[in-house]
Image (cartoon, rainbow, N blue to C red; front, side, top):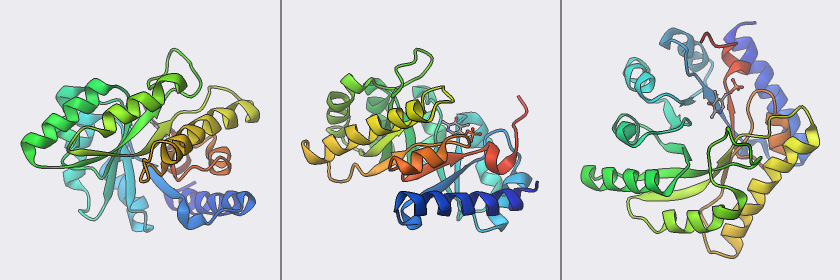
Length: 228
Ligand SMILES: *Cc1c(COP(=O)(O)O)cnc(C)c1O
């Protein structure tokens, strides 16, 4: 299957999942995850009208994005180290995976020095798996409130990776936990703009749409499997 066939099919599946969930498909953004793929491959999706792309490795992103059209909107979805903020923060519309107060403080300081502002999401470890980054369900509210109080950044929502499971119920529960934290932040803590939920990848985006995801991050489902 070509990138264009994959994108067409994927957009049909997104529309179908939205319909089943009783949601407006316009409220669900497709982030095309292009890590490991060359600009020529990324351009195939761009030529189909895709404008929102996600990268997860800071140096790779630094080297790649200057070769691609300037009307692409980039999101950074990977684990970010403080010394690589400079490769990312000036060039992206959204940083998805802020997983510590320390990283948030470093972004805030970098932005202050460079007179820029970042929109960020806070990563939640919704399955409590040791291998995953992010705040636990218990830590989440306090951490978000502390990060939200920093200057030069805005917390726009939450991001998670689902439980490593084949079980629909378990996967959906991990997404639902994150949605509940976001609702709590909006309802009880006054974070009115905390309305982005970055949840769902190639294998579980339909469940994520049913649990309220507003950005799905799909790589393999568009570009095929990645060489490692
Ligand atoms: C690579 C990656 C994705 C895309 O995964 P696929 O299974 O290829 O769709 C989504 N989110 C994050 C954080 C990733 O690193």
